[in-house]
Structures are given as C-alpha cells and as structure tokens.
Image (cartoon, rainbow, N blue to C red; front, side, top):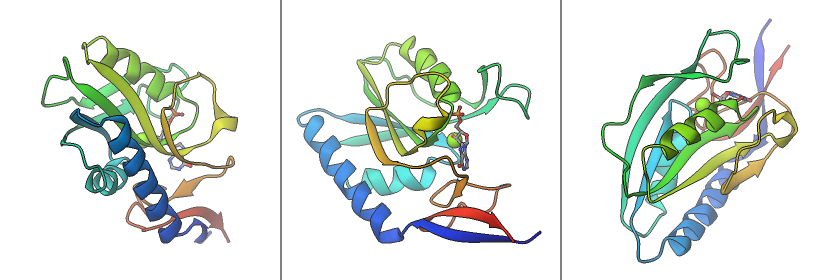
Length: 174
Ligand code: IMP
Ligand code: MG
C-alpha cells in the first residue's frame, strides 16, 4: 500500500501559531531566563522554531526517551535513552514536545523532572489529541488541538519518515 499525505495544518498556520506561542512565553517569562528541554526526536523542529521567537534569554538541552517494551505503551514507564547534559535545579524549565497523545510519556517524564528540583516546570506541545488522553497531564502551552488522526511532519514521523515536512499532514494509505 502506498502512503499519501493530506495537509492538516499548512506551513503558514504552524509558523504563525509558533510566533504566538513565542510571544506568549516571552511575556510570561519577562525578566527571567527560560531553559527549554526538547524531547527528541519529535520535538526538535518545534523547539528550534519556538526558541528563535522567544525574546528572553534561552538555554536548552535534549532528552531522548522510549517506552518500555517497545510495542506497548501500557506500562507508562519510559526508559531514558539520552539524559540531559545539564542540571535543571533552580531553573525555569519548559518541556517541549511534538504531541501529547495518551499522556503516559509526559506524565512519567514530568514527575521525574520535578524530582530534580527545577524552580518551575511547564509543558509546551505543538499538538494535542485530547480525545486520546488516558492520564491527565497539565499542558501549559498548546499549538493546536487536533482530532484523533495519525499525523506527521514538523518532527513527527511515521516509521521514521516525514519528520522533515514543513507542515502537519495526515497519513493516508491508498
Ligand atoms: P503518549 O502521549 O505517551 O501516548 O505518547 C506520545 C508520543 O507518541 C509522541 O511523543 C509521539 O512520539 C507519538 N505519537 C502519538 N501520536 C502520534 C501521531 O499522530 N503521529 C506521530 N507520532 C505520534
Ligand atoms: Mg515524542
């Protein structure tokens, strides 16, 4: 079966919304510094574009996680594949994710990061599928709420492909 991508959010829609999020974060963190934590690989494009639009001092770090057991996410336990390089103690931290789906990954991750003593800890996601939520997670900044469809682009993949698309699309099998 061949795959074809149907545009859900255009490049301009995504860029405009990221500008708004950047403005909002710059306002909310006025007089402070913000430390972004990018969740690899999906959060990478979003974090770069967002960071460029934040006007308060920005530092950032990367973390890579995977669900235990590979195919199943049911345990809600995530394995750290690559940990942060720097301590987050005393920092104003924002976790940058591509999408919140069941909420399992973020729920686990936020609890773990909280235990490391940041001054504050917030979550910013480009996409949110609220209808899929199994565990509630506090999302502070959301780019777009989307329906329950499998999306790719702007960092999101299907079988490691399509991360480089500059828009958000839905995979269709034809
Ligand atoms: P959850 O919130 O723990 O269920 O998992 C979220 C993760 O699942 C995201 O960080 C993505 O890596 C992946 N994911 C969930 N929905 C999609 C999608 O529509 N497209 C691509 N990846 C997705
Ligand atoms: Mg992800």
